[in-house]
Structures are given as structure tokens and as C-alpha cells.
Amino acid sequence: MALVTAKPVAKLEPIKFKKNFTEFIGIGENGNLWVEGCDCAELAKRYDTPLYIISESQFRWEYRRWRDAFAKHYPDSEVLFANKSNNGLAYRHIMNQEGAGGDCFGYNEMYLALLAGTDPKTLVLNGSNKQPEEIELAVANGVCINIDGEDELDIIDETARRLGKDADIGIRLNLELAPLGERHGVAMHGPGTMQDQSMGHKWGMSYEQTRDIAKRVLKDMPHLHLKETHYHLSRMDKLTEDFAVMAREMVQWSARLRDDAGWIPAAIDLGGGWTYGRDYGTGPGGVDDASSPTAEDYARDVSAAVKDECDKHGLPLPKLRVEPGRVISGPTGVTIGRVGAVKDLGYKKWVNVDLSSNHVPWAFAIDWHYLIVPVIDAGAKATETVDVVGPLCNADELGKQRKLPKLERGDLIAMLDTGGYTESHAGVYNAQARPAMVLVNGDGSDVTTQRETLGDIVGRFRVPAHLLAGSFGAPTQG
Ligand SMILES: Cc1ncc(COP(=O)(O)O)c(C=O)c1O
Image (cartoon, rainbow, N blue to C red; front, side, top):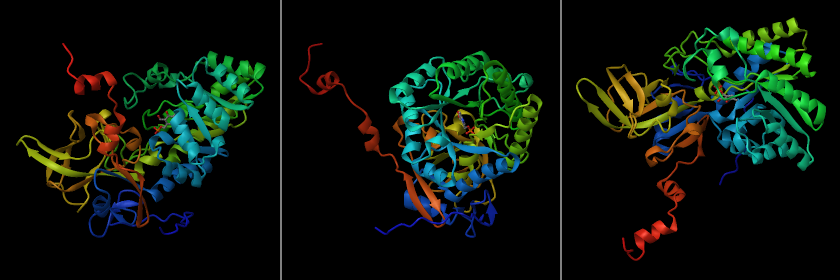
């Protein structure tokens, strides 16, 4: 085995393709889809399909885009990558090398981040039902816990005392978002206005609960350190103004907490939900088009809102934390599938592929629009309208009514911008095995998640003894 030396990654130079989809993904000189210096047709041959492919350079690029936008507009900011959007170990290593923090959900995701060597002080643990062992892992390692339940403070207190440790805590807020009482988002979170969604979801503590937690900590728990308030609604609309409303209300809560509890949060954490647009339209129902705000737009408007609101309330500027997930990981990946049965009913044509909504769950579950292109001759003119579907025994729609060139059994297709919430969200319905994930760096590629096999699937199942005896033992009288 050859010795591997770390490649220098300090400077990233976007690649000029015949047509660029992103800085590092595009149509190469041979007409095929390329991820960095790798032809996706070759990757499919080498690693088989279905296949997730991630561009390392794009991953770093997207993180830096967010880091630099906030650094430009705000004196003290920190980007915490939402690990859930791609929680593979390799990706956490990349984020660590970039100096990114992370948002973790649950014991396992926190464990993965710690296993990758992430500085625990840059991690936060979120979750609405944290288990004692999860809290213990966080306290033992110094991960900030964002409280989101009435008895969580007591469990953290007991754990910290038992371990003889100090613990960092934040409080997840349930904002009212009154100015968004008439605004409707993209309906990813059910019906109602954004205010209804905020007040109707399971997350966060009321103002009174937040105040009481702060008072209890300051009075009785010197070994617990109040670090931040946190809020995450997830996808609102794409407007920067909506995010600015959220940021303002967090500062308003800080002013109330100062007056009522004597605590000024040193950091406010605005969570994720930020979006990015494409000229071909991506996102829920394809609404994220070229008019979508950029990282720069979000950073400018949200930073201005925080500064203005702090000024109004005579507060020092808090550290600003953001937890972008899909805006960092989404554009980094393409998912490759192979065409199987093509069925033309005359009034409708179906193109079956070996990819499914198990693998790209948002395509079907929330009608997330991902551009689909052929891998070979990726820029070929569309000649027909088809539904691209997977093999599962539900509708398994990956792309409805897509305009594509004629596809035949054996052809390859790619779904773009599928770097986030694909592998980490993948299911195993119909006992379908999950794809491999491959990381591309320049003209090199490495498996970062092994392909699941039938053996992996069978190996998880167990048959209780009485059923085995019933099937294979001596016949029993009925
Ligand atoms: C607490 C928290 N932060 C950040 C994120 C990332 O959100 P997104 O990928 O929409 O940016 C999520 C997603 O569920 C979340 O729950």
C-alpha cells in the first residue's frame, strides 16, 4: 500500500468546464458530467450504481463561502456545519480541517463528530428528547448542550456533579415570530404561516421557561455555564428578511433576559434553513431559482438586523453562530443511477432507474426538485418528457415530467445538488441496499461509505427461538 501524504488544500481554484453547474461540477470537454477531475461515467464503471459522489473542493468551497460572508459583515461569527446533512466521518474530517464547528443530533452523531477529532468546544448538541447517556457524552467531552426540555437542566446538573465537570449549556427558544404572522413559507413544515409553524413545532422553550432556567443556573449551578440561545425553524421562505425577523427576536429575548434574569447571552445561534438558488430551480417544488439570496445577502441582512437590535436595546454584540446544512452539503454532490426498464404508455413515459427515493428521500417526500441530466452527453438536447422513477413499490418519483433526451436501458443519469440529506437520510424500504459514497479530490476518488450488501441486510435480522422451532423443529400438534 502506497504511503499517503496530505494534499495541500489552502487555495481552491474553480474549474472551468464546458458548462459549469457549480465551481467544481460540470460538463467536461468530452460532453460527460465531471466532478472535479473525474468523469462520472468512469466512476460509475469503477464503483457501480447507484452511487453518491461528493466533491471535496466544493464542500470546502461552500463552507468558506458562508464563513467569509459572515466574517465580512459581523465582527464575531462562527459557522457550525449541520452534521446531519452529511454525517459521514470523512466529511467531518474535512470540516475539522477547515475549522468549522458542528451541530449534532443524538448520541451517535455527536460520537461521530468526536471520533473525527472535532474540537468539542465548537460542537453543539441539539435534540428534543436527549437521553441521559447522550447528556453524559456531551458533559464528559465539553460539548455545549442546547436545552430543549423541562427536566434536561436537572439531568445535566446531576451528570456534571457526578462527573466532577463543568458543563456548557444553551437554551433552544420557541420564538413567536409575530411579524411573520401573515407570511407563508415553503410548506415544508405543514400548513400555516411561519408564525404558526414556529409556535406549532415541538422545538424550544417559552420565554418564561428560558428565563427560569437562566435564573436557576445563575443562582444554584455555578458549574454550569450559560453560553447561548438557539433557534431553528428550518426552511422558511428564501427571503433574507424572514431570517432577519428571527435574529431580531432573539436579540429582543436577550434584552428581556438581561432585565428579568441578569443574563445576557454571549452568543446567539440562528440554526439552519438557509437556501441557495439555481437557474434551473431547485428546492421544494423547484422554488429556489436565480432570484434566491446568496450567503452574502443573508450575512449582510441578518448581521445588520442583529447590530440594529442590539443598538436599540443597549446590548453588546453577541457572537453570531449559524448552522447551515444543506447550503454547504447540497451543492457538493451528484447521485448516479442506471436506467433499466423504459415504458411508454403513449400518454406517459416512465424511465426506471436503480436509484430510489430511499436514496434521495426528499425528491419524493417533499417534492424537492433536483436537476436530472444524462451522465454521457450531459448537455444533450431534451427530446421527450418522462417521469424518472425508482424501483420501490410506491410511486418512487425522482423527477416528474422531466424534459430529457431519449434514455435507454444501461444509460446513466445524475441527480444534481444531492450532497445533503441523501445518504444521511437514506432508508431501506423493500430491503433495498444503500449505495456507496465516493469522495472526489482532483482526479482521485475514494470510498467514504461502503456499499450495503444483501449480507448486511440479512445479518441484522433475527428469528426468535420459538419461530425457528416452529418452522424447522419436529411438527407440533395444531
Ligand atoms: C438545529 C438544527 N440546525 C441546523 C439544521 C440544518 O438545517 P439546514 O440543512 O436546513 O441548513 C437543522 C436541520 O434540521 C437543525 O435541526
